Length: 226
Picture 1 (tube, one colour):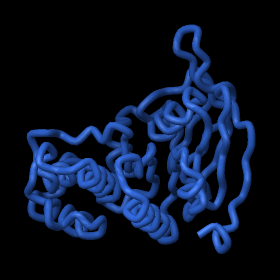
Picture 2 (cartoon, helix red, strand yellow):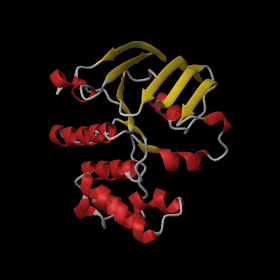
Picture 3 (cartoon, rainbow, N blue to C red):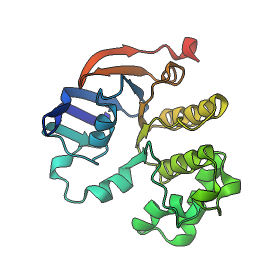
Picture 4 (tube, rainbow, N blue to C red):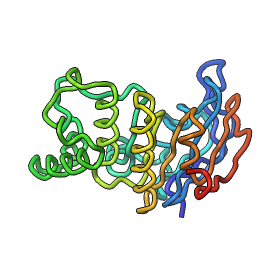
């Protein structure tokens, strides 16, 4: 069963056609990499898949729910969708742990449990030692790990990652992809935007966007790619 499905989705911003009739399904346990040149619609695709934006036409379904019929999209995102933003979007007045805790607390999880979950996932991303530091005190790579931890907390089934290795060296980037792959193998669906063939090689499938259209879709042989 697909965790997220886009059916003939278009997105127009004035005269700009960001997406032109894109259809895509990502199943539980599947990692799909999205590649393409700048302006091809990659980030728009992620925003629509996660309910951060609505399509001009077409349908987006997450966990069996048509997003056009969901009244509280923010609640659906907190419960089902983890998003690693390209600009990270960490809250500067909160510590690393508090940033990771926030979506769980907004869902009514008590602070003690939310902190325990946050510390566990920070440890999973190799960021346990920076839990009580503020974003301005962290390196770019450390902030990236915190943003990824925030996306992973709560066992969400759909993970959307927009260039999650952008601020990381190659070895650390490999660790992050291994982490996303492990979550995928445990039953999550992952949609990954990347411009690096090295990281796309971790995917089950690679989608190439060009001018808002799926120009190519190909399977990846994981055994030979890694």
